[in-house]
Image (tube, rainbow over all chains, first blue to last red; front, side, top):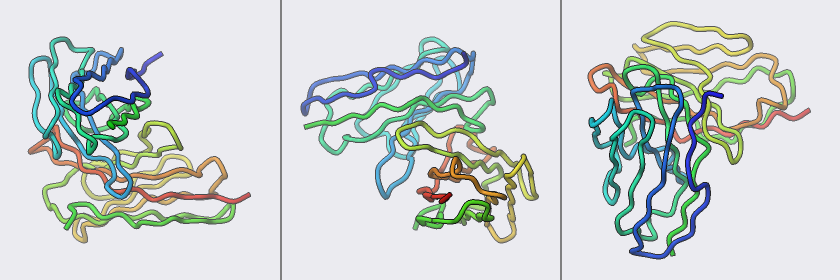
Length: 113
Length: 112
């Protein structure tokens, strides 16, 4: 089944404890992206990757890191999480050469206390 | 001011009604436009994709883009309770193909 998977689905952590949210797609898509979704603020793009080893900032990259060492995986790294990073995170991928027609993962709900 | 403004809703309609969901935008560079549907506790799923101005129809769904007015719409005909979800508009440009800007979403409830 073609899909985007994220792990973990739910995570509660404490301020300052480094964490990684994994994202993997099995559709051989070149484009991948991370978003956060907050009430009243909608979906906001954090980082995106046009291809392996090619990443760029979205609208809200502060406090996040990404890497794209292989086509299928695009992990999101929070080196020192803070409570304002409590949010619902979505990974997405697209067969197209950009943010068109994206397939989204199921989401990761992160709480930072 | 946000680049993309979406009618906030929530919207509640009876089954069988025609629903109109709307977004306006300010960035004239936007060339491609999407509508996503998001059920509660799920990730968004692509409903419609349109490039530039015009209409596109897919079953009960019709997407309209009016670039001169910077206005896009999604129409749902013969709405069903299964259409109850949050609808998100999204848009982007070829000059910065990796970036995508979303509206805040409109929550629709279709009552049987």
